[in-house]
Length: 116
View 1: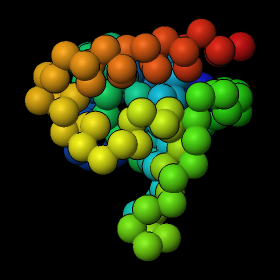
View 2: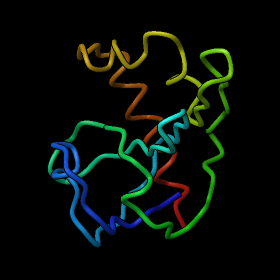
View 3: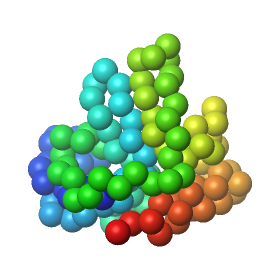
View 4: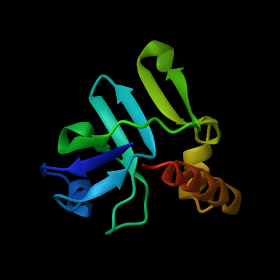
């Protein structure tokens, strides 16, 4: 799935994004605040969640590695590679755990390689 950044909103993470640039969506997260895309910008190598309101779809391809997880007693839904949904994965990743980083890179590559 690819999206184009079309608007800025206040907030430091939005400044990582370039208007008009397209991004590969690595994860889709939905909760009571709305839909969020996990992506990596040019300004930061950190995979971060951004509001879908900032983007327009370029294509709607769903990566074959994505699975759906319903969490928090049905209050949130995540579509992402299965290894990223294991409890504690993101904490390990952001703590620079080598295995989590390796898994992230492998799964990100799979997603990007399917882009059309």
